[in-house]
Length: 132
Image (cartoon, rainbow, N blue to C red; front, top):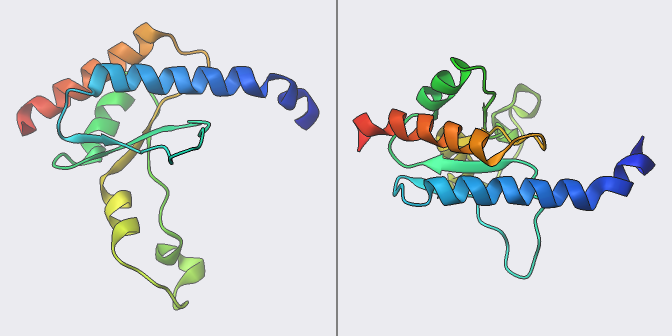
C-alpha cells in the first residue's frame, strides 16, 4: 500500500496545495481568519487546510458545516493537555493552547472541486457576519 501511495504522492500533494489555494482565495479578505503559514524555503504538503479565528468560536463554524454534512475538526489537542501526559514536565508559552482554542481544520479531500470549497467558504462567511 505504501509503495502504491508513493507513486501518486506528488499528485496528491499538488491537489492538497490547490485546495489550500482555493480556501485562501475565497477567505483571504476575512480579517478574522489567519491561515497556518508555510515555513520559508519549504514546501508543505498542506494535507489539511488549517486556520484560526480571532473572534468567533470555531465550534460555530463546525456546527454549520456539519449541518450540511461537511467534516471539519479542531486543531489537535496539545500533548500536555491529554490525560496520558498529565503531570509531565512541560515548557509552555500559551501558543499551543491558543491554537487549540481558536483553530479549525477544514475539509480537504482530494476529490473536492473549487465549487465545493467556495460553498464551504460561503458558509464560514455567513457564520462570521454576526461577529464582524
